[in-house]
Image 1 (spheres, helix red, strand yellow):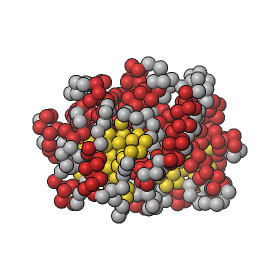
Image 2 (cartoon, one colour; image 1 turned 180 degrees about the vertical axis):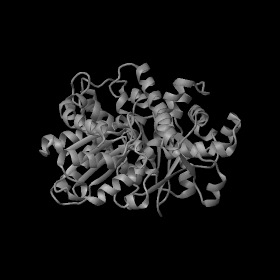
Image 3 (cartoon, one colour; image 1 turned 135 degrees about the vertical axis):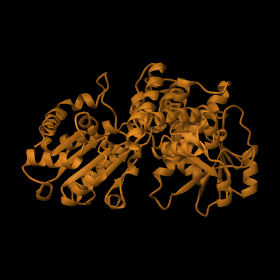
Image 4 (cartoon, one colour; image 1 turned 30 degrees about the vertical axis):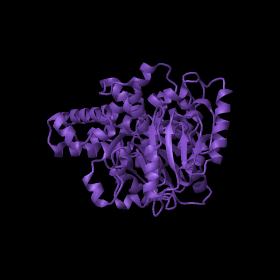
Length: 483
């Protein structure tokens, strides 16, 4: 018997119920609010316990700092206090902690837990137990180990969290059992819910604006939000600006000073590289350093000015080395790309446009290392383009399992073209232009005429509310960030 593992399990069973309030509250003692992901998982648990569903194997990949650990503790509290599950039937573990003393093996952990606490094995288990496992990527064979446990018993309910790269590690056999729910960076709607306990459903109305051009419901909700926030004594006028450049992560949500927010953003970035990317891809120190350099170059320049060939030349590295690093950064979701709008030939010839996972991460890297943009408005415009790009990217991922809402995002290859093009299958393309200042509508009108699209969208601070002039919809950056 592994005494270290047994002691850890006993420690978790005894300690976690006692520290729940502390883990679920801020330093001021105020309890954290729940993001919408909690309700989705809560429903899954209820369905399982009520025998309305046999789904019991859930994977929650996400970037560091987005609140995965807090979400697990909220689920633990729900099981304990609202579903009356015994604390001996809920095991929360951090694979990061276990890995500090010995190699993590989720199968061994559960078998030891069942033997010591329940005097049984997975195959002989006769009542539901709940495994809440954090940072499972520290078990290099997590997919196989948990799949074996799943197959041995219908009474083991598992919620696993970890790096955004988790999707790389499971095979087709495990994938058939897994239900994957990405935990995304906070949009502004979730930011308001977590920070101010203010809930809005405007995201659904804005998605309707994107794909139908109908603005009435969104206008009403936007007007209500603006009035509510003015009357909210806790809401500060510069909150959105802070969110725009430093937000999107639970770990920056309640920090007071910009320097602390900037430090946390870099801490998130650095840990992704050193603790997620490096062990997953078995990188040596030299390659790890090159990952940092590539990320700094991507962050410091405009999306259309960066390419793998340019980065290779700038760093005096072979194209194959740089291509591999770009692939790693994309697979771990710290960057993503859009291709040019057009057929396969166009897409194969044109460079891709690269963006960071959030505008705040781009800003955080730039604050750490500097950038090449000298004009403040130009810099903020580039960050805004990244915010719109990442909002569309997250929405696209949200809809990837919904056949009625699948859509693609592109950029306009033409000189002076629009920033983004979104399109559902067989539908007309919808142009989106992004910018600060007195943003003109020339690019959008040109696109509408060329493709006979019904409407276009301009995201700009030209307006502080949703407006429609002819067939062009104007939307403020703040409102777009609710999506």
